[in-house]
Amino acid sequence: MSTAGNSVERAARALIGAHRSGGQVSADAAFAPRSAEDAYRIQDRVLAELHPGVRVSAWKAGSSHPDIEPTAAPIAGSRLHQSPASLPARGFRIIGVEAEIAFRLSRDLPPREQSYCEYEVADALAEAFVAIELCDSRLADWHDADPLWKLADFQMNAALVLGDGRRDWRNIDFAAQPVELLVDGARRASRRGSHPLGNPFLLLPWAAAHVARRSGGLRAGDVVTTGSWTGMEFVLPGAQVVARFPGIGEASVRLAV
Image 1 (spheres, rainbow, N blue to C red):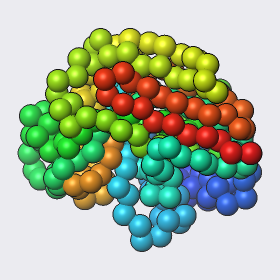
Image 2: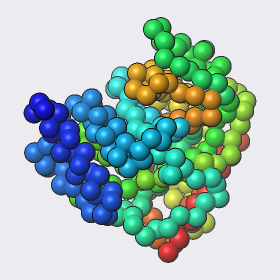
Image 3: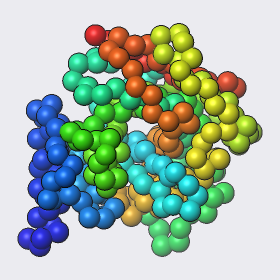
Image 4: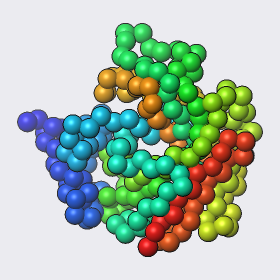
């Protein structure tokens, strides 16, 4: 095995162990991922070990700026929950929450030589809906960890709660769309038009191409969530969290003690 391949395998084994034991991995380890491709290989290796034979039907995609290459991470089916949800807080090292807009597909986007254009991807979408991403980390020093380590660690995904939304999503003015994040009934964050790309749909053509190259393409019913509108807020066990996008819908989750 090459040095790079050995590093990927060592990083994957460390993260697999952290998932199973509840422990954490030092992000300054000598086998840190060196590229996004390394990080994706680590994701795939961890996913295959923890969820053997299971096809991924949900992905998270994100970018902090239109000129920055997006990133992606698969979300295992066991981490998907329908709102209103109640999830055990036990086992979380940190509990980060993010208010997001996700999209669900109405038809397949299989691999092909020519990339899908925006209108083709738009025609394949059934709805836009509200989601809450719950974030945690298998990295002991996650706050200061290299972004490639965070990418290898599924971009800190711990769960995705699926709320309600709209089928006429093309009529949403995302640039002016308000969002509220409430914790125990108190407003923790309130923004307007705060998606990093202005329009979260802009991530979908990239995500379709990424998944086509990586795992056979998106299929009808698959979900792609597109990043936080409120940043990551931290909550304590027992918290009740609501993400509300007026005019679109809301999602809620309780972190049960």
